Image 1 (cartoon, rainbow, N blue to C red):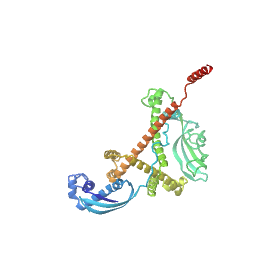
Image 2: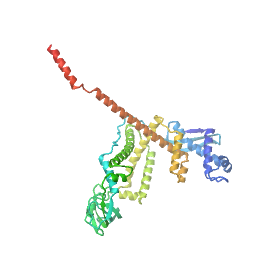
Image 3: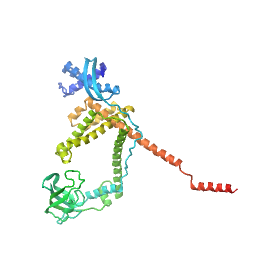
Image 4: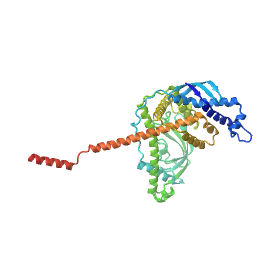
Length: 450
């Protein structure tokens, strides 16, 4: 594509260039980066201003040029400035990989259903049990441990050959006997032991244990009981309810728990519903995922996982080895996830374009202001927010979010209309009351007799 910029385009870019150059400029009487544009022009060479201006002008307008032709770029592969007269005009050619053709399916009548948000009695009781447990009193007991007691233990987990395995050891671990925190057999083996007892616990990991290298394998835990605590569970009554907050009765407490669970369930159900709608739309649409985008997504997935496992003191290779997975197996799974993400993004972009879903500059500014507050202590993040490409990325994400809201509302309305239509149809087909039927039959018989 060939793009021409006029004086107005270059003026906007020049102002941005002066702002950027001012960040690293120290002018007497002003704090660094706070000097006005008029003074910046005097301190910086015209050539430097011109170079910064054309750089910003190209990067700001190259994506817009493709989008104006309804060819959103996946990646800009080459840009060449062919003409540049500062403050007057500029021309450049650009080459980009663009989005493939996508044939969007019917987005209004998707199969996804909103999940239930009403908490069960068991859900509420689980919260109540946790509250009661939190207010339990623990006292050191000179006795043998029983189910329901808390023990403080040290343990070292080893394989059958005596080799320690990762994540199988701990010191001063607090364990409620009977809670089911550990694999079957472990907690039962502690029952009957008292403070100071040192012994081995022989168990076998379940066949469906997440750590594949341990699944179904025997293990020995060298265990030391350091303390036994007797747990006194308080009675669930109005006095306990008052300790939990602004409640007068247990009923008030349960009502508040139910309300909070409803809100949490609704948020989870709504997010899942949106995800399911997108997956349904992908299935209904004809969309191909370009390899360049799949590779980008795979890199994001790898980087996220690498950072995550690093926070636990492991490399990606160590994590995969512990999970019993080869790098090839992981890459295959990651590629499937990446491909699905790309397809989801493409159908949402096309839907946004077809429905002319846009985000105003004011909305983008408000979002950036919000992000500045979040990252106010990170100079790097704040500097990134000033870059045109970061601003564009934020805008794109906001458009996608608006599109998701649009998709959700459309399908909720369709589902609601379908329910009303079904109810109306059922009412229309409803047979006449039996009483009327008998009257008709009786009248017919009299007529026949005559």
